[in-house]
Length: 150
Image 1 (cartoon, rainbow, N blue to C red):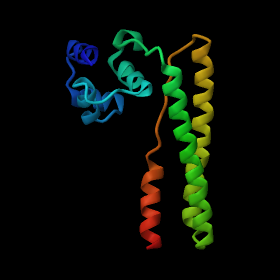
Image 2: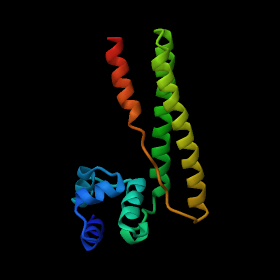
Image 3: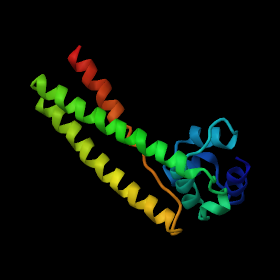
Image 4: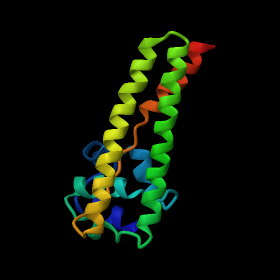
């Protein structure tokens, strides 16, 4: 994405500087700039905020954002179903500590999903662009739990 590279260099920032300021991994920024990865809207928002520009200045929001956004939310909801399954599995193994951790992630995930749906409503009203966060802790906990069961 040429616009990202142009704005970043105009601000005198390296990819590492932008990664620290935005919370987006440097390798992700590199792949976006090289066109190897398409940035999600939430990622673009973080980058634009860190650069002090509007999302529209960084890049136009894709016309098909609704389909992308709803697809992301469906994926997020599917992960929450996986969390419930993990909690149930942990309880069946008598591991309340893991069940508690799964339920903490479920609680946070449901709050994030609720916030995201409210954000979608604001987008439809023309108030803002979409923002979405991804919770990688679920994958980590699932790997840890599977190793624990083995």
